[in-house]
Length: 144
Image (cartoon, rainbow, N blue to C red; front, side):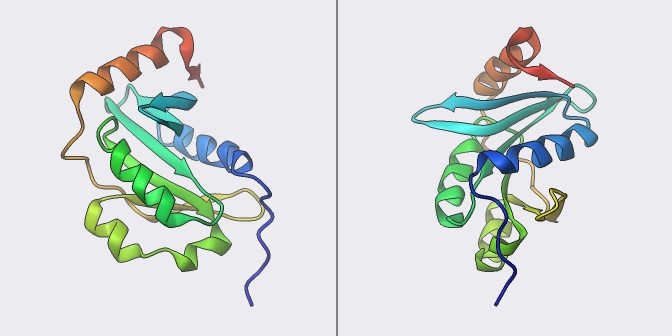
């Protein structure tokens, strides 16, 4: 039997994931960015490499996260699913790899690490990306 998950709600995953991406140069970030009928849990932009990331946080339901991540490839260069380390064993890594979606694990101590890297989205729409980068850099995002 695995170790119990210390995360009682998805929002508790946000801080470690945001910190992880700040270290990777994604200094412009926004939570809950609307995209069609969904909300991207964390959207980030790096001026260093002019790339964007979208992250879907889930405690257990990785299949639902996968459905949302596929959609987020339209608005971000790289897309990730972030889950507690204890839930990672249920994830179909091969399916994520096939679709270029990255996977992050958050340990009970709040440390975030990459399990699977994200591939550059081949369907990202420059229009969406430009709108979101403008939102982040014109005062509606957090600059770290």
